Image 1: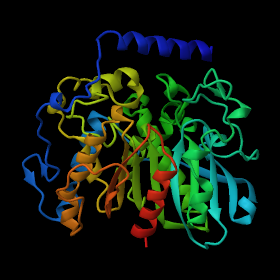
Image 2: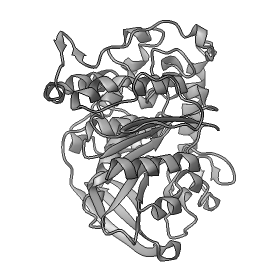
Image 3: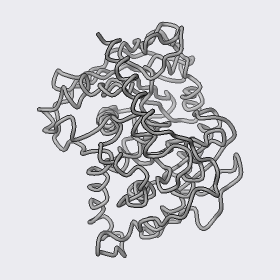
Image 4: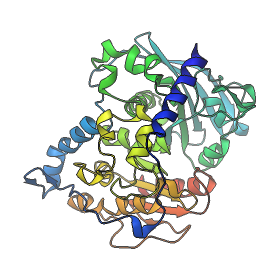
Length: 415
């Protein structure tokens, strides 16, 4: 039955995508003119101080919630965190623990926590993974993920289910030992524990199973919201682990999970810093720039990520009441890092850069500097301080170079 549902979802998405021909634009001369909404203008109100911004920032959050990502639950649930196992790894340099989070006895999520033994109160990088906790490490004590995963590369993944050979296949995306050696910890869970990433994933996820307890109907929010909610619940766990510094938790994400990390950071100010790695359309990139992936393309391919209302702005992006620079601005006044890759033009690196540059208006209210009036930087040349950006060589991925920059960023901005 599950295979039939997944096949139906794939065919349905393919049919929708064929209703309109799509050719991605990679020509800057064809981007066209656009005007960005001013984050400091909310209806007829002009914001001039940080106090006014903090009092009225809900204006933008509500617009994103009603047009794009959906609502986030306001109700608190009974969350039971149980330690399953704990052991030394990396020759004693780190302690790895496995936790089980249980919500109302209806949803469970498995969380891997890896902390440096040399640090009493460790800062940590917290993020979701795509294809199961076992993919971040070859350690056989990490439980295999048995739900639907995005990956489907045989023999590691068959029919979107993880196989034993998938252990450690995405270890390069996590750089656990490098992070530990820098004095940071790693916390992760599979996004599929909160909602599987397909059109019917909500039926087996938090949006359905916890609908009554959370007081939200499944259609009132989205997969992106479910993942953002999950990040905040992992933050709840992190704040109750004595060896973690609760004031130094950096939320991060790659690609679609970078979008979720930004939405989580905008709504949950407990996250001390936010990292968006190649989050593209619906993430850090400006929607008004018709370059690479567009609203039409993303909402046809992944309708469950956003509200149906967002899809109605296809081919009329300039009518959106916001753009993604405002989502980034909602992360103020915390440190933010946005990263792109030259081989990932689909995610519109220039659109991600311009969006990041536009954050300065809001940060200036706090007396903090942004990127300034600079042009697109060269490859492998990070720019900025509190707000940072880089575009590196290579493809759509998160790799050792990225992590070297994020570690440096964390050390400098969370001191």
